[in-house]
Length: 162
Image (cartoon, rainbow, N blue to C red; front, side, top):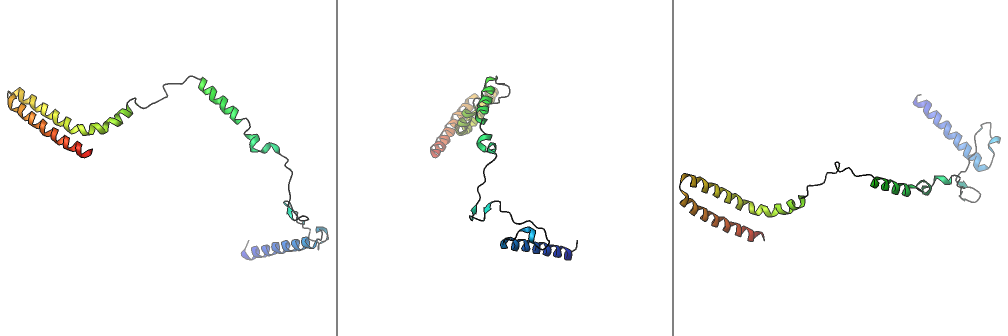
């Protein structure tokens, strides 16, 4: 269909609609027109006599939301009770480890102690190595001096954080 043909078809359609509207406005029945058999306008939602919207009687009362969900709560409660009555399969339950909250709370506190712990472990290892070589006396003095130094640094860091 070419553009010209489409335009002519549209013009003809619009002319027919215009004619039908004029016939309806004039109150002429559709049977008395010029040989074109068109239906007259039918008002479905509008009453031309009163000028207001028509109120239709509801024929299908079963189609309301209330009717559709009427037994839904009872069915949901019965289903819940049935599921509770069944034995729980404990193999499908994967809880968190029992100490996850303790670990979370203690990690922050242990972070402060980690440098002291690492220093103490390294000093103990040095002390053992020196004891195996036979020079235990100088290592003990170094150990005490190192622990005092680490304790002073930790105390300064802890007072700064508080």
